[in-house]
Length: 449
Image (cartoon, rainbow, N blue to C red):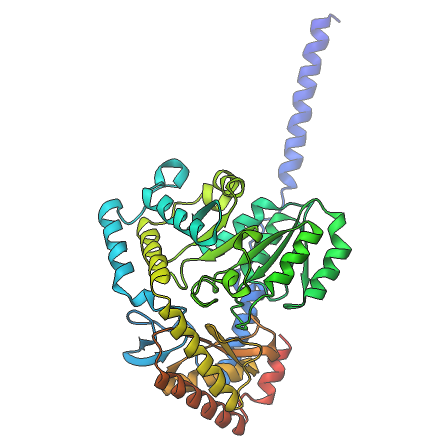
């Protein structure tokens, strides 16, 4: 047989073998597998159980009420004006006509949307003007604005840290920091809330095992209304060679004599903090987030941070409104004094009434700790019926025994409104507890979720 004959025979044999393999594979094809329905996801089922328990007790959903207009010291819900403690319009600037006018001028000039990411064609002069003002405020070399406060933390931490690094954060840190830390792949350790000794213990055990280390705290904690001991934390970050990131989302406009933020309250040089983070939706009456820091940090984020590079730019109107609000903060510190006076009055009256306000300080946020999640929801509903809007923070956002109502204060609140809020809270809580509040069976079911 010639070489050509042998080659032809191999080709024929190979083709036959391929046909047999194909037939076997077709006959052994796996059955079609259906994707799990979303209704079977564990988180969804937990929500359903919570809703069922609420319905069993006749408790309505305290969330997602439509505010029919501008929410400030008062708001309109279901056609009725109520005293409002659920919005963080700390200095009343969401209701001030000047930021709104600045936003209108920006829309007239730039349109509603930048229509692209900033690195493509979404850059506008108002972005750089606003960022320069933020950098001056914090005494940093540069700043960068993002479209979302939550995304600001996620994308910044995710960009800076990786699996070789260490992230150490307060146990009550915001969810956005936790998500960013998970995304980064870095080793994550928490320390007991505001416990400097606990922080040092973590650093002593972990710092030498990692390349870079980042400490993350908040200026004003949004669930408890207390502040971080920044001067002591700065000493530790220097000793152990760490970066320090301060989430000042709730601190800007509320902390310090003139509302400059956490650095003014602590009496520190803001340049001793490596990364200042904040949001536009609290004091500045807009929407978005920002990072302030060194030129190298900001340029790194500008060129690499996914939440900036691959996201549409901040709407020019939002940047313009926030810039105007920042200017008003600097020009009218009396708003800060009124805010702090309002918060201090509520704290005094609430504690005199026997309400548990935890570790709150007289700045802008005060929790009234109830304990039971269903009881907190019942209380919120009863208070709304009497014209006071304060929303519950319940399981699983906080542990079942740590549920609370959270009060946000504004410089626009009056003394009479604050006194009425304490009176209604105290009376309705006392009445619910006297009637048994949430049933024991429901409480036991909730514990089992």
